[in-house]
Amino acid sequence: MLSTDDIVHLENLSTEESLLFITEKISEGVVFSTSLGQEDQVITDMIFRNKLNIKVFTLDTGRLFYEHYELLSQNNSRYKTKTEVYFPDANDVEKYVNEKGINAFFHSVENRKECCYIRKVKPLNRALEGAKIWITGLRSEQSENRENMKMVEWDGDRKLFKFNPLIHWTYQDVLDYIEQHNVQDLPLHKKGFISVGCKPCTRAIAEGENPRAGRWFWEESQKECGLHSK
Image (tube, rainbow, N blue to C red):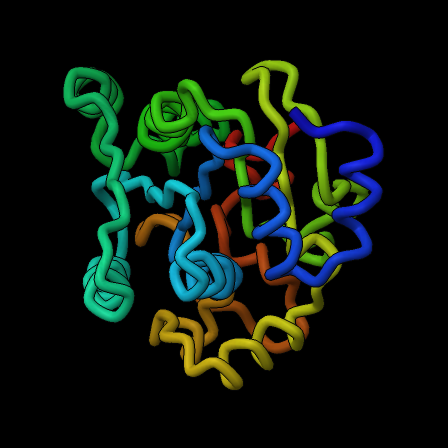
């Protein structure tokens, strides 16, 4: 596992160097969850281009934009690999929809969080079974909830380390990497969709708005679904 010295060392490495260090330190059980957003596309490129021993997976909630599926297909073709896809339990979705309605998440924060739990959190927990290191594309400037997150954190509930290699990156850093390495990203980003989730729950943001403002735009909340909440 990671020692205190390892964690300090990671802070002094470049992002690509840190990913390589992680895989050298932990030979099995390193996983990366991608939502196919711009940050995640950066990490995906680093992993596949360097042929790192990291399992890459994504969550298909059943309500994504068509563009997500196109980009997933493009990734698999470009890097000659396959990103693993995890789906929600069909029985959970059927029960929720039949009891509360297909768009019940609009009616209350509780309904929305339950939908996120069924479609995202439970599949994530399955994907993380047996993992030792969970890599994410989180950045501190994305939201208030993420401002104080560290590069390496211990997830006590899941009993694994959470590694956030882009936590100190700016959005401009992300855009620069995408341009320099010709990384494909969602066409939606150029239409004002900076943080992209499920289609019914995402809108484009106006200039100057927080990147997470377009997520669950009808409610006042921390703009989190439960995947990365403390």
